[in-house]
Length: 138
Image (cartoon, rainbow, N blue to C red; front, side, top):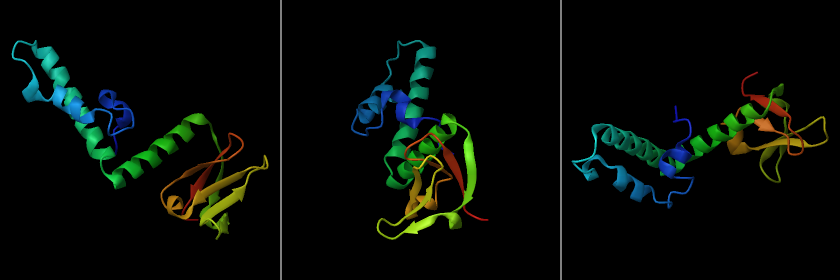
C-alpha cells in the first residue's frame, strides 16, 4: 500500500527535481544541531522518513506508475458515485489506438488503453462526470 499522498510529503510536489535531495539533506537526522529541542528532532526524523518514502516511490518508474494509477482512481472515487459495473469483455476494442471503449449515455465515451485496462478499476467518461467500474473477471 502506498502512502496517502507522497506527492506533497516534505513539499515535494510531483517533481523529483524539486529539491527532494535538498529536503532529504535538510531533515536527515545526522544534519540536526545538538541544541535543537528533542521534539523538533523527532519532527525532522518523521519528515525525513516521509520524504525518503516519497523518493523511493516516485524515483522508480514502476512504483510511480502504480502510484499515479492509484491516485487517479482515488480522485475518481471522490468525484462521485459509480454509475455502472461493466465487464472488460463488454467494451469495444479499437485497434487504431490499442484501447477499449464504451459509449456513455451522455454521448461521450469511456476509454482505457490496453495496458491500463489490466490495472485500473474505474474509468470516467470523457464528456460528463459519470464513472464506471471495470470488472476484470465476469
